[in-house]
Picture (cartoon, rainbow over the protein chains, first blue to last red):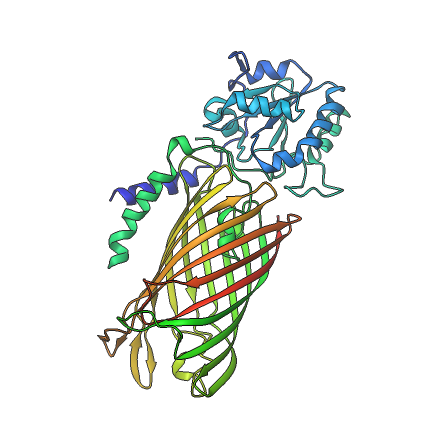
Length: 187
Length: 302
């Protein structure tokens, strides 16, 4: 009987797993000092902010480190802020930050406690990138590019294209793509 | 009966172990235990087609209620090729079709026979209630399948040694579940599958093969380059056959097999899988003991 109840609960949970992509302005992100900042305030600091859902151990993220560093360098100079977001339930934040720094990912890494932000944005995999404007509106959500662990010479550069669009004042041509990273252990 | 009694307990034990909080940490990416079965789609994969070559030979036999015998009284060399394809039709649901074609060279004393024939075509679906790695709850998948009698059953095989017997001659419906979890590069997996067969006429008499059960335990390591080394232990059994409504004792079988697999993802688009396997005592009964290897190559689409 208990097994039947558990299976039923899992079925319901799977059926309801699609979450909304409404901007979760109230979701709070915790920085290195333990300060909790609502996404709304974080987004207000720059014209555009890229939230990169980060898991240090994920091989897909490791494969994309160089490309991400290059994006941070290129678009940071054009006023775009990058923030690493760790949403995993069992994450060791000190280790995640240390590993990001060791790999030259110089952006701040914040904790998404309870994976509220990831859930609100429907993020299921690490490497997922979400581009928001100063008001916290989601302009792009999806993969950094079309590659997984094996990098092709000419990937579809989803995030770069989205950044070019917004910086040129155009609507983002491809606002939703699939992120090909590792499953985020959120709960 | 054994399956019905032990499966819930085994499942609950595995769930409790896999959900162990201190073990819960970040995850492997892609191939995971999907490499256990060549047709399963890994994370992000939308479809695949592939082929497998399986070479095996007998290295002994388990008679009914008896000890392991080696060398065997006869010897089979089997070459089985299987074409398979899978497609994801919902984010968490996939279906896989396999079409086997078998070449058998069978020897008993001075008699040698070689035959080739299609085997039983199988269709199996999988629904991931929870994906491995996405929660402290282990990945849980429901499995359901059907197998068509497209092969040659032993009563319709030709020759003295029935080397072209490649099927069971009946439809089979199967259902089961698998549990899987990842802990960094470590992957643990368990599957339970049970199958029931339809009755059929054999020489004018109704015959029903006994229910089939398959249990698989697997574990291994996945490296960052998406190369996995996996070890498996699988046990399969079939209940006694029923003839004209009466169970015939001693007609069922059991076999236990261990295997070592290497699965490599190449350029995110190809999956190469190779394995060596052997039947092992003592859990064999009424069955030849096989050993061999497989190699498969699949083209995948993200």
